[in-house]
Length: 485
Image 1 (tube, one colour):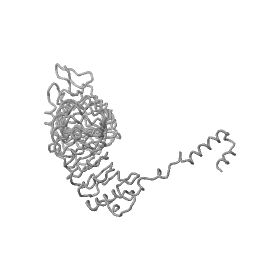
Image 2: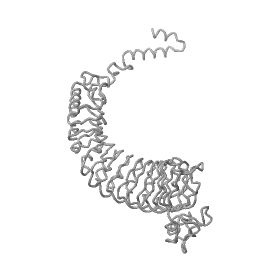
Image 3: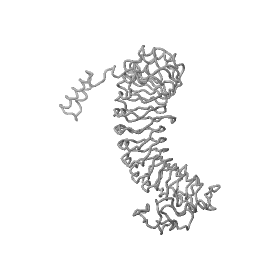
Image 4: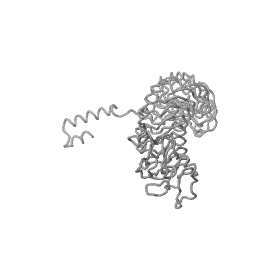
């Protein structure tokens, strides 16, 4: 009938009608329509009886956990089991029982021989992880947060298909075992929040497919020594977590990791200057190097990191000015530079429209306190040498009352309008700081108008004051950033 109707359509030529007939016949022969068994949805298949027995044993062994009530009735199809996926043959391939309150030994899982994906994170599973080595189909393992599942991980070296291994916060103790080097297909390795010791082994360079590497420790002991050159070969890395260890030395070796978007190096003993090579890390959006021993200046090339939303360099030994190029980092939300030896005038920050947290406290900044495009929710300018009668304002000229301004050299106006006035340094303390020091001389016209070092200079004609000039024998650099000989 369909062909008869087609033959009456004037728009079709004889050749076209013939082609449709051939195609229709082919479809009837099932060459273009799927067979009934191909239409089966894996989740709707009846679970394999052997795997069903394993799930029943799990409920008995692990007690009631979130979703376990759906596992107790026999004869169900796979989609009735919360957290379980099956293949078309009914074998369990995926198990997700995360933060479910499960408690018991892991060994009962070994009979699930088709299991590929296993997420038991955030429970109280015990026993030896060596049991999982018997499930050679596994490509994903997350047992993080099971603090008593802390042995047997070295047996996992035979899991050749493994791509994701998360054993963070499991109570793992000791050095990074060589078993890791055999898992060359890994893209994700997380051993964080454990009692790691020793150094970062060079054999990690064999894991060339790694996208994520988490080796942050608990902060009590942690990894020691310098960064191995092999880390620089993991050029697919997008996230690297090394914070809360006892690592030391320079960090330049990481300058080759140009795909990084998150880099956490805080709470270590890294030293040397801020690495110029980091200017190549143009995909970074999160950089933390807090609580280290970095020295020298923040380089102008930091402007190349124009995807940064979070920058934390606090509690280091950084000196000099904040480079004006930092004002090009227009995606910044958090700027944390407190507890350093930074000085000079703070550059105009009104171009950073997304700032929500700014901490410049415990430095040696002078000049008027900075203004902002909008009021950050947190703004700490305490313990500096800001001077004058102005206070931070937003783009509309409204006072930012969230600003903390204690221990500066400000003359807070009576119209402050933000509650009690911030307490300031004494005039003698401000004058002492402002006196002749190093290669700088202060005009002495206004409290706090000079600098503690040879860095930023405001020459005569400044809209602030004709305050600090270079001492005899020194001259202002072309960019007016420092005194030079």
